[in-house]
Image (cartoon, rainbow, N blue to C red):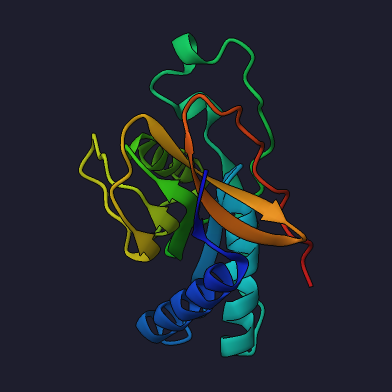
Length: 187
């Protein structure tokens, strides 16, 4: 196990990312953050707090479950863990920041984009991730990223909670997985 991002690095990175989002969107009233269940939900909850501090207003936050939108749902999910999608409004004409913990092949992002379209037609969708680990199978890239690096295919990147804060680890694929942390409660 290798520590990729400690809790302070995650916090600094998300604060910087919030600044970039705020600058690019110029305080847009049409902005909404949508975390990909499960790993993107805790990241988006923390990111929205930084945005609210910068913007001085509540930025709408939701989550989307991609289970049934995966291209391998029928074969790879014998016991799927399905959770609710919670999108706070129609996404018609909105500027959506889709948030996930780790970007790898791009298939999760593709599924999330399909799921988003059930909630309207956004004006623009951008992708924010904590870690871009390389290894893309689809032409998808992050617009906002805390850390980019190439991770060997036999390893994985996990974002876990330690003492109420997020950290990112590189681990062997043989290591048992830990469920991602629950989203932080809204202020």
